[in-house]
Length: 217
Image 1 (cartoon, helix red, strand yellow):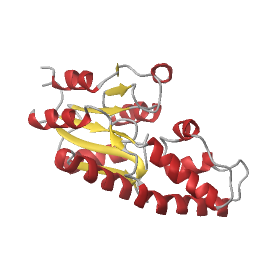
Image 2 (tube, helix red, strand yellow):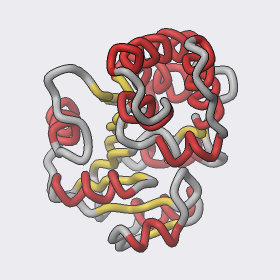
Image 3 (tube, helix red, strand yellow):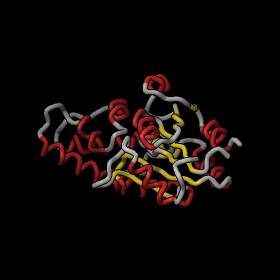
């Protein structure tokens, strides 16, 4: 096979998390009497970690201390409400099962905070995903390659023969910075035209196409 390891982004790639993210964002905003955001606005805000999500969601010029409190309230709410409307995209579980059966190692690397990444992966994928890594203090988040390299180390595999799969410009940059090929998916939070504008080399529209690329001889 062409690849021995597949590293996936989480939000917009394996899981449709948008509605739960929007609900927790709006809960935290409303708690502080700030204007709430539409789901489409939240879609545009995600991808660079929850700190930047909240920075984009609060009104411009919001006091830094208030923004930090909104972020803390978002985190607390999301951790206990992140499984209400979230679900794997159709065909994702079957894709992960096929990869495991073929001997391809799998990991998730996300800019979502680490506790949420590990909790969601355990809840929705169980042992289908071997390693799950999110944002944590002292480790550079995507598009820096640090979390990808950590995932490879925890899997005990090499960068050569690994591939990164994600739905955003951040994922394209992450793959480039890690020295990995990138498969971009068009069913997530960014449209195909956006991905092309940001340098996507390979774009797939469904899980079957991902399987075909990963399992080809």
